[in-house]
Amino acid sequence: MKTPVVDQEPCIGCEACAGLCPEVFEMRDKKSWVIGPDRCSTCDCEEAVESCPVGAFALVE
Image (cartoon, rainbow, N blue to C red; front, top):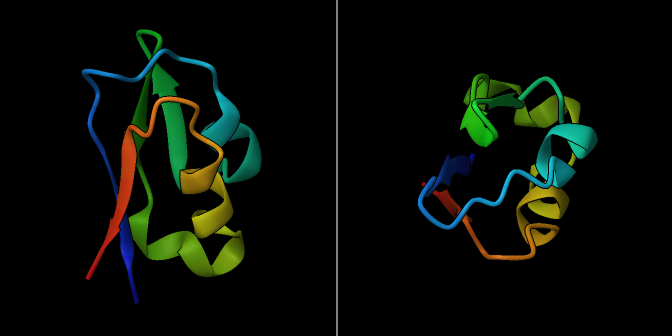
């Protein structure tokens, strides 16, 4: 299963990822944090990663 990772430098805090996968992503200090990488089966992590307007995410093995 692929795991989401975030590069917080480009993150603009739009909350798109947290809105799509609140079990996996959380907003702290206007940046996204991966809080439950093992919970991708409960939402569509790929859609959340692709929704990022600045490409701050990747899915890794």
